[in-house]
Amino acid sequence: MIGELDAKPDTFFGRNQKSLERMGRKLAAWNKGNVHGDSLRRIQAQMAGVCAKLPVADPARAMCSAALLPATATKA
Image (cartoon, rainbow, N blue to C red; front, side, top):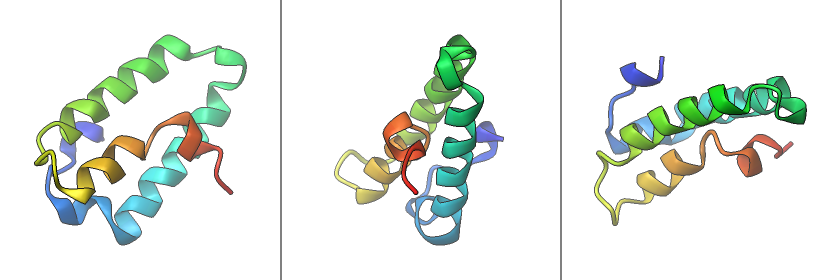
């Protein structure tokens, strides 16, 4: 699914961003106790590849980068 994301600013705001954050929370719960740490790191690396396609100064790049991180995943 991550490979299908368009590296466009619109992708990382609004409903799309909320969906990515929800996926991040679910991945964090799935990885409780770091049981799937290697898999989660591969998923995060895929996401980093998508985010790297956005311009460095674009606020969407920060939103993209934070979408699947554990800090975001623990938000309520």
